[in-house]
Amino acid sequence: MADFAEVVAVGLEAGLDLGSAARVAARSPAVSRGAPWLDATLAQSLSDGRGVAALLRELPGLSVQERQDLGLLASAWRLADDVGAGTAAVTAEAAASIRGRQAARARTAVVVAGPRASMWLLSVLPVAGPVAAALVGIGPGRLYGTQPARVLAVTGLLLTAAGWCWARSLLHRAQRPGRTGRATG
Image (cartoon, rainbow, N blue to C red; front, top):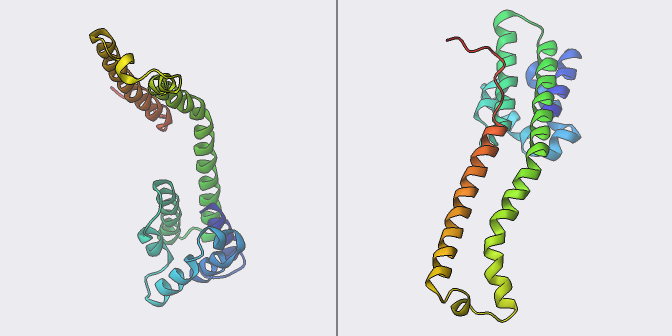
């Protein structure tokens, strides 16, 4: 999305209208590798008279992040139309903002990779015990043959499930965007 916005900004700076700049951007190597269908979709949208910004808001099959990035770009173009700002400058700033958002998402993914791996490892370990016992010849009947062993196995599975849910909630909270404003009370 950032590549698309940057190439559109260059086209607008060169004097192309938004539709032509978007078509040129869609044919650029970086954009066509990621979205080979975009040029044909843009051509259809422009021939129908819908425009580029309307198309960006309606594209199917996008991730939440891609939809947010395209929404930012469409909002920038709408703002440029509403207030008469330079579309090339607004598009370049939107591209920089999209790049910043992508970098922040990448940093967040790196930061949570370790805790996520630990979560998976600690969740797999209780299941690995019976598998290891089977590999050395101890069957489940012998392993869980007594009442205390069965109670401990069920307790262990329940605690593993609770730990999984807790760790997931911690990771989701860690990945939420921070608040920059001050709460008024």
